[in-house]
Length: 282
Image (cartoon, rainbow, N blue to C red; front, top):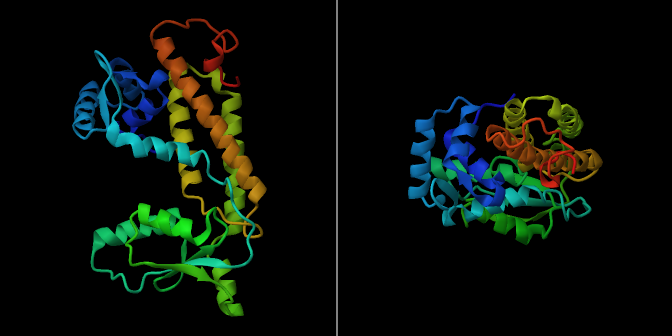
């Protein structure tokens, strides 16, 4: 099971799934309690989030996402679109050469490494990173995405191909496609198996486990390199991505079910008796 969330991460996630986008302090405290996060930590975190513009008041004792959280909401929507628009691979690569960027600024190095990782680039030779050229929009779109992720503008981003046999083999070996494909199948099966038994769990247990399992799966989607055939099993990847989207939708309903149960509004209701927007498989 994944590590429990921080108060900040939990509150922001709850705001993203809250009905109507509004979360009461009461529900934030109830949700935090599932992870042994105390009421005082919730209230302090809400004050700090409000000061940073990440949340704002939405009536007495309630909050919604603030203007500074616009990119957060966009990021959440973006992972659900992962894998869409991928292009057939013609054997060429998008390359990024970082040799002129330097290594003295540790903060810049961290941002660079994160950007390269999120974009699925791997180091073929020192300061020379590549990935298959199969992403939507080609090199121009990837250059823009790297910049948005914090890559220095001086990075040289271009199309590369025609490697000699040794470098071509080394490039294809940068990713363990068999391990990635096996992980897709394993994660999809885990998510589907858990969902099949979710309604047998108490609402608090189901909400907590859904948060942890769903978060782990979403991180796997976000950091997936989106490799083309024949480097990975693209069908297995899409099946896993689809399972993650289903799980996320069901997880949102499970949290709504948990809050309703705490308010004693759905005592004894079965899943079929719940409104359609709160059923797992609606």
